[in-house]
Length: 442
Length: 129
Image (cartoon, rainbow over the protein chains, first blue to last red):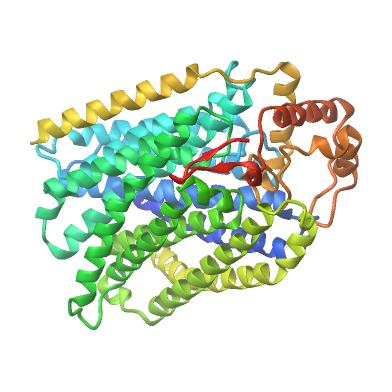
């Protein structure tokens, strides 16, 4: 009798994450058309469904791919396999969670909060997924005697993800749900820290991939690397207040967040120094897609960090808060940094070199970068214009302000479509090869 | 070296937990059960997809923190029942509409969400009106 062959669970999870990215980009482009064409698909999909579909797909692309790639990397480092039941329980729970979310959204069953709009019970399988992930990672930990900084980043990232995910559901607790200011404060504390947590995991993966590409392990264990890690961690813990400067919370929350956010200038200056060094260095004419994605992420870190620093100054934040400047920052971060890094790491771990030099891959990469820079810039411009409007109350109504922005929204929607074609040129061939079982896991 | 890194991590984690605990003890306006039910209506109909409270939420519709000042419950009822080119019509019952109104009235009285009324200080910080 022929023995049944099961796919590798982590590889299956990366494939699922890529499917979610494909869906997320599609829903996002459709949602952006709602801005320029009011009522776009209102009777069938509508913005009320499209936004959560887009956000959840993209959030789970980031979380699931980061989780699976950390597992693949740990397996490579320790050369040990965690018990199969941990992996397969995680995969089953992921499928239960994701399918339930999509069914709820399509049936207009909401009940959660921004970014997590699904009914609260779905958080239970998702929490179990993260607890199983943590258990699997702890299994590897005792086999790593002196961990370099990226190992620290994976473990703190995962631990904080569990903590902030739980904190995100504090609104179910009496005493929090009756207090709007405290409730909003904790909602944005957890949302801010959650992004910081997945950044820890993804930046750690980026560093691990660079170690693999260059073969140089020293920078990942240097005191400087650990100083930067702790600086990032302090920001994860205490800088989330820049989301809620105008909320009537305690003044110290604003001041602590302002002061901590400003420490990111150190990271920015260091990145700028490294970028200048890299700029002066003669680069090889052709590099694989893994390095291309990692280098693109580097540029996006620089641009987004500068924007984040400016937005973190409370006096400037008054002009950007609640405008598309915030959206430009979150798109630049999730697409420009997180997605570029994750795609680079996927290429490094799983895509053979000859495919990385493929024509479609390269064309897709260029379209993606061009689409993203136009998208980001137009969001920034429309956000600045909206910021000016909100600081001059009474100059025009909300509707006329939105009408005046129609041209911005059209460019936003079409640059989003450009980005989508770039993504699909990269993702579909990758997925097809995967389905035909032609891509190895390194 | 690793042990000193562990110590730094422990100190930071302790500070983070202490800060979180302090945030939970801060005095803050407290509302009754109607407000909680209204918030559930807000979430059930996913109003946050398009609208904001204190500038937090979607960008397609206006910020609703102080919307009750515009025309009270009749205005809210008219908007919910007729919609707009972008906004779908919602079939809320009277209880849901009342709860939503009480929720928005609670939000309105909780503070000021108009950035143009904040004052800036020379160090780049801001103070509420």
